[in-house]
Length: 216
Image 1: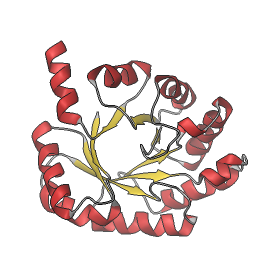
Image 2: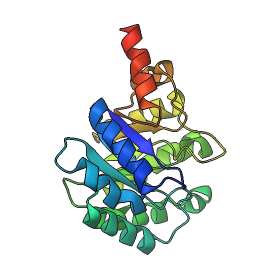
Image 3: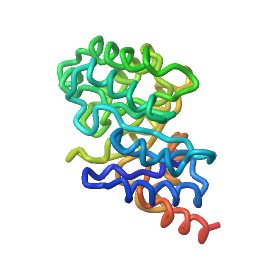
């Protein structure tokens, strides 16, 4: 269920290669890295069972839809198998969900199955009604997952309440729910899963798994 993540702006190819080696050792679902670091990740992950996720329009989401589309296509061409794109929060702020849907659809158009598209809605910024509307846009545009957060916004990261609300919105459409941003303990991770998360984005994966092992 875990996307082992390294998205620090200063992360080097060497840092990403080390992350990917750890991802293989830990047996996680995916490694999640910046689009520019995809070639470095591929060098390590090639031939392994660990999928490679790249972020798109990260972390602000304030990119033209065409730029997000092109970044997505390049990341997939370089070897990514999953994409985590950030919506334009400026559109969300004025309830222009049609434009949010259009940019998701633009990225979906260059992300054919079996490639996976996760959409980051920055749930801590949104009202409950905003979360509902964002989820509806994701469903309509063909996303595979709704993801809570980038982990970089000052409003905060994932919360159990947001995860539960997203899960209620997208469960009928069988979309996945990814909780990310601030998950640093076994208690938090297990709480997100109980709330409805089907994928977790974490950087402290080894520590959290050790804690879960101790609990078990």
